[in-house]
Image 1 (tube, rainbow, N blue to C red):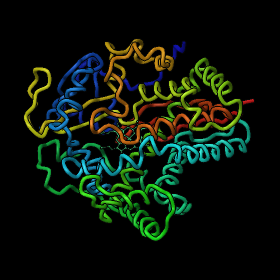
Image 2: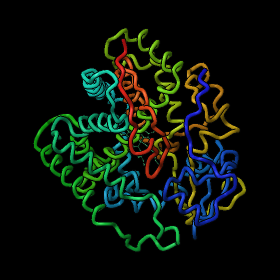
Image 3: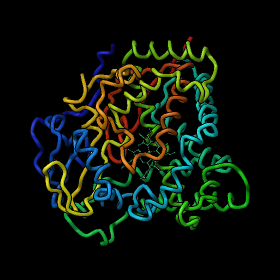
Image 4: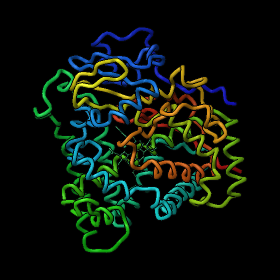
Length: 453
Ligand code: HEM
């Protein structure tokens, strides 16, 4: 069993004073939690004029996100304002009636039942990456983070847009999404000092430009899809009808939901896959076990959707990766009314969060919480885990709509690539988990490609 403890930011021994806390949150919010936060079950943090309640045990997670979902369904003002220029009223940041209607439309589009249609696209794109790597000289350096971002963007482009996107549009949209993420901070100080939601926020011209570029590409694709019958998620969105009212989406709503699927559906998987490569490169026994499984199940051929249930260790590697490095490490909500969790009063307007970063490394919930041990996710060990201690896809009515898509995509990509190559960290590279909107291994992950014999 691997004794490897992958990197995490220093944990202050005591809670940070308010200003140091704000600075830490803006730079890398993972570094803002002191050591005790990995033991508490329900605790509060004062953020300027807002109080944050952190639900950090299975029962408090279930209360906030399942039992009392109606009181906590709204995303935080920070998240809503950060993503508004890009997603408008898209389901990721909407609530109430709009969220319900959009969710009913989007869920069937990215649902597990569509995987037979999407899985071959995933394998085809991963195999193109494997071929490209095979053509590199042995030991050639790559940026594994960028490689995975390009791969998952390619997959989401081909499934969302069909082949109509075109290389040029693909490059523009991927670069603009990444630029948007870079520019927009998760922390909206105006909301934290208690200013009302309706006050307009300042968005820099660069943020607006990035959002406009994405909208132009999406609008163009949607116009072209209106005429033809090509299979793609855009086509499905165009044909979608609300199951209750029978109404279709208006053009702006349609574009917002396409942007949601594109944004939610590519960076999460990309960051996690990059982390998997890093972890495997540091834990040779786990890597050997992965290779043994791939050789036994696939024997050198490309994987298909039917192989996924047999790839139990491949899946365990990915699940352990997103335990240690959940791509969405902070799930924030705002209380819509006065509430109570355990005996703690939660006043209307307060912020409430489930923090997978803390929960997944909680000392009372996990044995060796900071170690990389994929075997804990093998089916025979499932009984050792408490329900709601592991929530990389969130839980409750707002659970990730693309969970099956993301997991299957990750397993098929890992299986396709790890059959052909192993990646090694470039000597001297220091890997640090950093989080703004999503958790990633810094801005780049320099590795070398070594073909497998
Ligand atoms: C490893 C991969 C993924 C992870 C870990 C992940 C995680 C999450 C999490 C934690 C949320 C809830 C965020 C919150 O409550 O603040 C979410 C929402 C969402 N995800 Fe994923 N996701 C992944 C892949 C995908 C993919 C591939 C798609 C689509 C193809 C997708 C579509 C969505 C959508 C539409 C929502 C919004 C759901 C709602 O608000 O009702 N995700 N995801």
